[in-house]
Image (tube, rainbow, N blue to C red; front, side, top):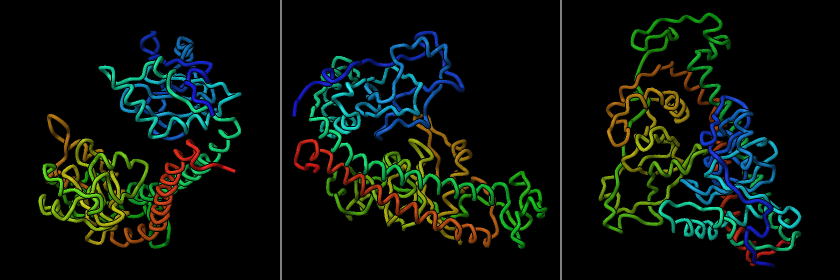
Length: 421
């Protein structure tokens, strides 16, 4: 085992360039351009949020061209200290000045091992401490090159990386399954409740097969003859939340009633369900803030800072004032409410107001218009998608367990408390 510096095991340490600083520009298609948002705590870059640059711009950004196997560090901004690996499918690619590029000596360093080493919480905390020494927290290239690195024997690096990679591969597989299930459920909702091609009495697509449509003056569109107009208030009881006094420590506890904030939903992005957030409230806290507990199946919607994060309560919980949540009633299921609210987000956002930050009130939310289908169609839809939701819930919980196992193993594998045969 040898403690060295990152610069000792790298052939290149540099950072990216913003296209506009060299007279370049973004494009609608072309070469991938990586921003720090793509380095957000997973092993590989999130290609869904790449920008694009044209070949002329790419030719001006010579120092920041990426190669397969490069280790990228977010060295400034909200994603400071996050790290990710460049895959072959990501290149050709470039990146901006908030991203540090490290090209490792591949004959002595396994890139996966290096990724996991710098993903340790202790290392992340160390990087954040280093960066906080400047007026605007960032990690310059000198500091990046001087980061510590535990250079184990190459075969030991590979063994450690293999164990952790197997866990990440399973997590990634579960995410892809859930994404496919989500696409199928969302497509079915759109097909039935947006295009109105739900199965008619003969099992054929209603509108496509000539089902009777009538103009609705309130919705200002044609809808199936037996359907009507309504508002989001018809879906269920719309409820808010509140915050207990933070001056009373007894209002919060480690094991109480889950208390969800918009920030918890931000951290939960990529998941459909939520069990608890960063903090629980005690019975004293519930009384202090006159909080109400909401049942499993409640559809949570963040109504400010920002508007539009959503999740379904896996178990009983409560929320702060940054929510307008839907407790299902009137025969509408959580599944139907979830997609109907999601489908109404554009209108909800348009109704938002506020000078400091945008917010949508419960009173306004209750006026957002929706199409109300026949109850039998909603019941049929729920029956179709319930298995998808159950499967997604199980896979999300499995991923939480796998993530906890990986994060528990990581430091012990690195410091030798656990060894791989």
